[in-house]
Amino acid sequence: MSRTQAALTEDVPESILSGYRLIELSDRPALTQYLSLYPDNEGSECTFSNLYIWGQAEHIEWKIEGDCLLLHVRERGDKPCLLMVFAEPARMKAALEVAVESMRMRGEAFQMRSLPSWYVDLMQSCAPGRFAFEREPHHDDYVYCAADLISLSGKKLHGKRNHINKFLSNYGDRFTYERYTPELQDACLNVHRRWQNAQPIPDAPALREEANSVRRALEGAEALGLVGGVIRIDGEVMAFSLGERITGDMALIHVEKAAPEIPGLFAMINRELAAHEFADLKWINREEDMGEEGLRQAKRSYQPARMIEKYGATLA
Image 1: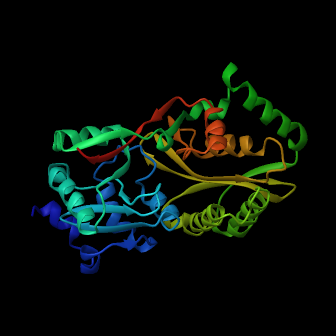
Image 2: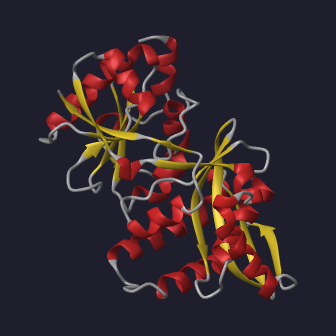
Image 3: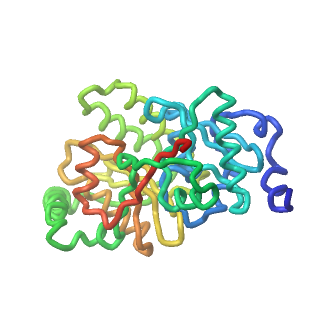
């Protein structure tokens, strides 16, 4: 084992090396050692914040084995799978075989999901012909120019400007924007409950899981290094959003919610967060649509500049 490989595992408890466990905030240093090996990764799934926020809902477990980080998911589609495997570049061929063997030992067919194209290229270069790949467009990330989300200029975003103008005509002198702080947690949770109660089936399991994930994001925002903002109307918090910087020129938005009865409020918090917190960045990644038609239409309506294509992998 090289000195770098030893450094990756020297602070990891033996219990983690031998078995999977759910992700907790205290796991951030151990996981980040591996996630940071590929600092230009733009994909939304494999940031520590995303793994922690949505980890319980999707039952994401992790362990260190063979000097690599394995991320196992039980509720992504209908079959267990792994997300990207992280190891030193020189160790990736061996790490992929560790991943194959790990699923075999659990009695599971080998599958990996949500793999960005750069990672597919890495797998193919490490193990030519070992794996077969298939596009997963419902996991593609929507990436926008930050400047476009702020200015909303051009014919294609005319509808979004209309939403903003409608909001301003009703609330132009009644709203304020401010950065999220832990003291605003309860107010933001109230906004989420307000949004959830307006859904056709408010107590649907997926919405209950989402509510728990939103709570984890708000409670852990400071420890996770998230940046957020809220919009107040007549002094009351009515919208919020949370995100983080994941590369030198990209932000990733994790959560965005607004009181559904106020026209243009979602468009407003989208613009205000970009303008106040991420105006110096080139790109904003607003994650995937998960195959949900309403979410797909909403994300497409902002005219993404590009998509981060995702793939699944099986044994060839």
